[in-house]
Image (cartoon, rainbow, N blue to C red; front, side, top):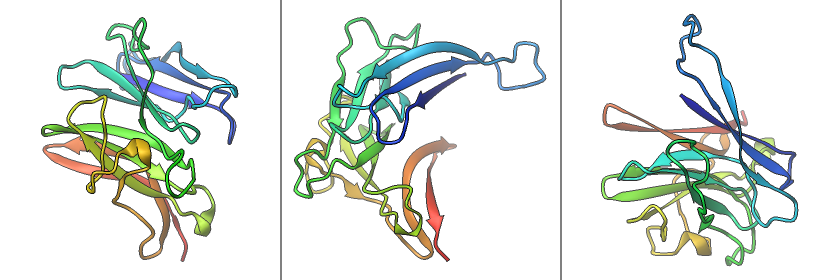
Length: 200
């Protein structure tokens, strides 16, 4: 079992993604125990991207990748070494979604989550403002690509690197700011998991 985690301070690019592993999730097993495998990625305030919000994904060939990033230049993708589950030697950090320079002139994109479904890869990301209670405007957008490295485009053909993304959640009923999603797949059914504020 593996758990990617991140550490940072709000609004900072002084951030780190780490990896912890465990042989079993049974706390009664003698083999149970989380082992911190250390740093996976690190960014400083001088970088134009942010090492938080990690999402592990396998491509069609079983090659592991890590999606990450928040604000600034957007969502990134890096190929991992199958043995260490850390960036492969010489792996390039690829940009796969950004709102920088988009018509709405905001950099508010984060929480990338990537899945393969059928012949395509689907990239989910959260747009706009999180963590403001009833005033939160968070929402989830998605684009798809034939290759894991992109390019990801929305339903209208707008590239996610140019601010594109088809909206699939937004404020509804008593819920404000639904976002920062994950996808859980079981027995052929895909579940969308996210958080939101109850405003009533």
